[in-house]
Image (cartoon, rainbow, N blue to C red; front, side, top):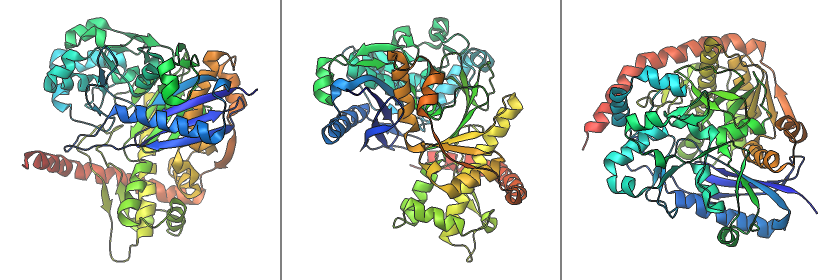
Length: 501
């Protein structure tokens, strides 16, 4: 009889489910897509019911096709996208679409919060700047704009906690997702109910906090019917997708760093001492006693996906990588600012926009492809440099996500950052991290260190090319200057869009 661990990932464009054996091998996996809705400029939302439907459908499909015996699944871990604000009633029904992590509608609420509580006081408590994309301003936006939803809401949940609730009936908030709420004490991992009172938020909306690997419930009879899982299967609290992918890459010791190559870009640097910088994101790791100093950018793999859909839909990802390899470092002068949905760290500018600079008739789509890859790499370097200035030094990077499958793109990132990059089994790092949480919580592994030793395998490594570093140093400075010069125009364009009927 086998012993399998299930990881469920609630992503931006799709949910992923994967069954692993105790050595980290993928036994079976599947994916279920769902839409993102963009009702207005600066808005991006999803219907959380689509997530649950996708999880149920995908689980049933994978179980039916793989022949995995549900009785052999010893634990379930769920990870999810950040900064949701899912209003549910007392029966767990979703009351409205949730703004997702790229949504910046709550700008006015941020200004109102600043009038209620000094920014310095908020930062001292939660270690993060106040941003409209975070969960707490979104809660106030619901309060101000959807008063009936706010009145009926019993809880505000995160993406993974909604799925955990649907599986078990347990109302939870894991520690790693606390960083989106500025009433979360990042030092102690507890809610500051005095702060919720000052901000005018009902304290009961905040779910009880749990360590990410703690078993919080078991699959109910109703959930078993919908998913195909066995009733009674243990489910842990789960965690943030970026933190789970960091765990799935084996990043659990101070200085180890995950490089994120999914829809979003960025990095997660593991630290064992509290280090906060307003330009970065600080969150608790899914591993106890660790924090993650993160740089999260809106332009990661999603920027290349956009380019493919709009410019070269007939090309595969591998073909695009081959074209990028035909262009020299620096893209013959073409620069790309990857701010495709505003920008998060370290700029925190919701008005930032994507830009191609340096085009002429001699340029081809190969130049555009490589420029996009380089622009994402420059954003990564920017975050790493800010982390270093804050006192947290990153060593070797471990790349995860679909972008890590491109040897060309991974080498560009190594050359731009000047750091060695190792690539584990990148496509499954996030679901593996969720599954590891379930494995530690149910006793399959006696520690996180043991779990990573047994499950994480490095597939290849990239070292910086000394001949490319000087070129990229110059282009990086041009990248920074281009944003500084265009930033006022970006703000003006945003204001013009707002005033357009």
